[in-house]
Image 1 (cartoon, each protein chain N blue to C red):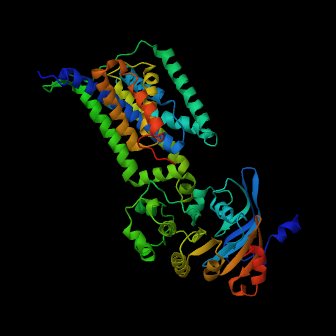
Image 2: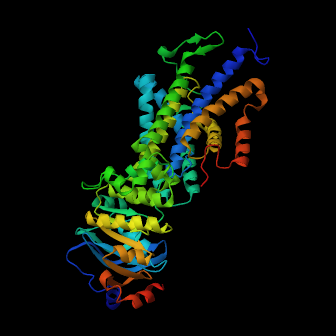
Length: 295
Length: 248
């Protein structure tokens, strides 16, 4: 077979696919963070833990209740989203009048508690989750082998990201959300229930994280620390895309995943730091992020 | 104490047929006490202005009526209903709408989205078609970003969007600020039209000549208190007094 730039195509496309998969998770998670940050002005440090809860919930649903993957894909985000709503009402909403730092500390503490509880209950060795039978196997595309489940992850993430983008940018509900992000007091003075909108937005952002967690369960083993490892990179993605930018977080998420994948082919030593190097450069050149609006 | 409270109540402030009644309104921004006793009434169909120097508390009065100020006391009744303890969204649903001083056009929304943003609270608002008749400029720029409009167009959008909702009482905060004379004139015509359509308007203005051309009555606000009320027809006779109040 032909080689591209001295790299066998199987290796190149294999890493590209891996990059795309990672990018899919970056995109969904940074999208949720962006929505939450936009309206609540809180950096949701519990996002990684909530992603892990999604994966864990799908495992628990399967092993204790016999609920299959497809139902878990629906039920786990709803359940974890409801937990998010409760956290927002009970704890986070008490901090809106304080400095951002308090929200960060609270959600960071929540992340530690959630991860600690999961570790205590399920250990850290990782729980296996089998790929659903409908998505087992793969396709030989000639230039590479594409496992069906990985293809599904990319398609499902793209669909969820684009649907979310569409709702926020093109619908009446999205207009309320964008307006409340800019000036919640005035939106309230138009008769719109802003506190309820904030609660539901947090719930939705958390549900997105849990959805990513369910998608991830069959790829990575379900592990209490799976979110903590990933979320550091996701924060870098959010900073690069621009805090609070919806489209920015989607494009940057997928883009950086691919760059990371390519880096693993061409210069593997740098693959784990490339995102942070890009973050440093973006912060120096365009502190508001690639898609961020400067106030 | 009782005397002090009485002193802040201009004559003719008590009317049985008032749509809006504000009594002994006080308000705070954090620790700082901004309103010390605002008293006025607005009858249905009237245009009433709040006149006063910068920082007298006119904007704060409008925001307090709307429920946008967290710490306030006194009494605000609209159509006989007490609104003092209602959050802004209930005040909006009761039929009061505000056009804020900074206009409050959302930059992440198109002109059309800005226009359609406030939900309908009652029947009887203007149709979108009627709003376009008042402000033809808006129709041509529906897909522009809200804040890409000129200052005058943004003001029209800020007024236009609250006409749709069915709100009966409009609180307009310095709608002519920083606008070209020809646009000020257009806003003046609009306010007269709205009055004819049956809207009731509370107007905060620095532009005294503009205020005199559209209003029925004027309340003078000084250091967070209403200190006088002048009927528009008595304006000429009270010119000296007014100059002393406003320093113009």
